[in-house]
Image (tube, rainbow, N blue to C red):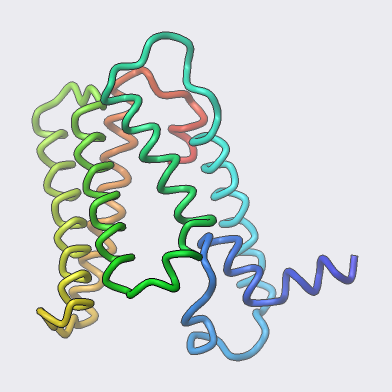
Length: 191
């Protein structure tokens, strides 16, 4: 039991369980051991992420899948594999390679989400497209920064706007999945 409690208080393992990658900046965020509220919050987040992982990796509903649906499922598997394992070999490569891979992977996932989900509303699909496009542009900007071609000093307001866009993209995706009717209840709840 002491080992479990020790691992729960260890920033590295707890952070890794939540974000699925090592805490490159956690030492700067909080140098002391995590407090009880932080530990509980991160444990809940880790449990939700584990459920999310299970929903992605479980077998799809019976029935034929279109080529786009198969491609989306495989890209989601690849995104999870990258978050859990593949980041390690990419860590030895230049940062530009990792940023380029992430940009291509998530751009393809976002495009396929727009094409696979039966949005049932042009406005909803357009709003999701705008949110996905903003996310892709920010990732592209990250790649340009890694390539030393672009440097933008984001202020706090810009970061909060970006966070709001990410939340809006997630909400729109879940709403689209709900209207689509082919997504399981568990997937919608975790979303």
